[in-house]
Length: 181
Image 1 (cartoon, rainbow, N blue to C red):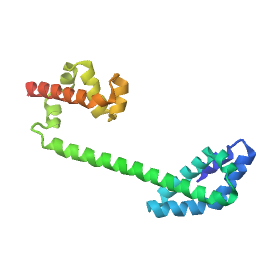
Image 2: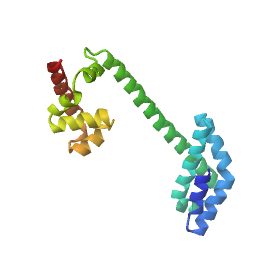
Image 3: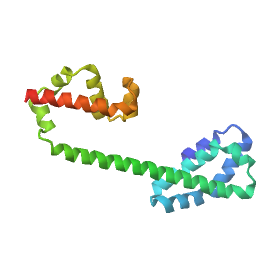
Image 4: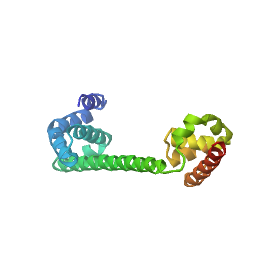
């Protein structure tokens, strides 16, 4: 919470700073309670409290225009938005982890064991046999865990085409591995 207080103190406009300080004193416990009821985790609720007040600082001009009796509702809605945004991101991350676990389980079912390949062969020599684009695609996706958009930007490929290019690169890699085995 010290962080958000430092941010509030750094607001240069005195009128805006005083308004945010007043709101923080008045609503911080309430915002924390609402956030906790939604996420059921105190540390996460504190993060949402900070996010809520950072968002309020971003829209302080709007707050200054709102009639005082409507500000509580605005703060409450901002808290809900921050909490649900957090939950959405957390759900997305959880789904990514579950998908990765499934991919790893599926990979265990594949005919060749990649760890044996790495142990028994000079894996990097095989990687060097691929063309530069294939090598970059595989490294970006599986080494750096970049998403399709990030890979597309780095390789100058439309993001929608990245899965196709990756699949081709994996097939070429698999053929090289099969030849070496």
